[in-house]
Image (cartoon, rainbow, N blue to C red; front, top):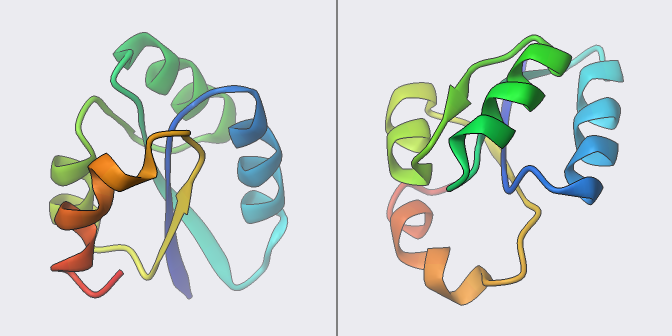
Length: 85
């Protein structure tokens, strides 16, 4: 089973979350957003764990797959590139 996480809980993330939760070989294990209340809403909606920090989510969940649903990708590269995600 692949472990997937999503960073960014805007509108497009709902599409990613729906697809991930429909997969038989993938588990959505966390969602992160700098606006924690958005992550909490998504976590409740898609039965997963909310995070306010990408780094904490990567460290705790050890995902195989990271869905980046934000516009500022370059700011986020260092934390997950070190973890082979």
